[in-house]
Image 1 (spheres, rainbow, N blue to C red):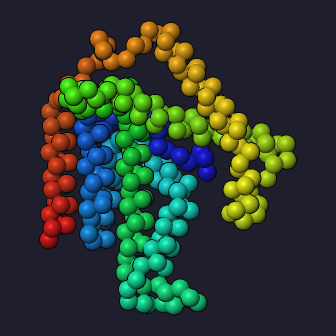
Image 2 (cartoon, rainbow, N blue to C red):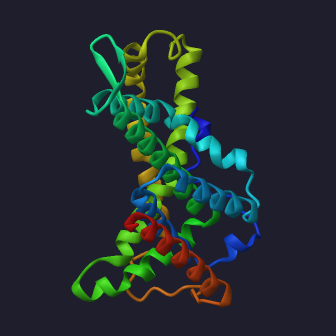
Image 3 (cartoon, rainbow, N blue to C red):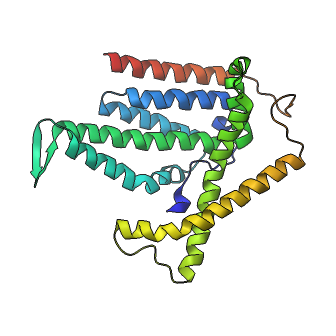
Length: 265
């Protein structure tokens, strides 16, 4: 399950999506997240899914590789769905003991489940098609106007990118520790959810130590390369928009406006 995490991983390719300016992709994900929460009808998620599939096809990423990122979150998605169908008041359609399943609860549960699924897919596409360096430069460029009021745009962008980049690294470390402890007789598979959660506690100490070690090595590597923050920093490749980026912006804005209109109507 740990290997199914796709957020933070980069899939190298020469597709049109990969070649787009990273600022376009960051803006797309920002508007995309807003849009999936503005959707007021379940059927609207169908054209959004079709649009995502087209992007996945163009980006030359295996659809199975993208959608497998949902697998680790299935317990959270199912729990969210169940909490909504049992806790939302409204017209009762089914009674199970002391719990009532309402029509409004089913509707809200489906909405929340779809939002979580689409949120994972969209954010995964950003990191899969954008390298960490490009993502840092894009976020810094977008937030650069805020630096005039003292906001540390470069430092914030670097911090966010490093955090995303090391998500898969930490999961790999977790997988290694689990395998090492399983070889010594640890059991992470049997028992109920509470027992499994307790069995995971011994993983926290070595994982925390390894995370600090990785952070220390990264800091030393950055200092060895004379990294001193964003002030006076130059770039090998400056970000520049081209015609494909402007077309992508138009498509993104049109889709966003259509979703907003569907919400109003």
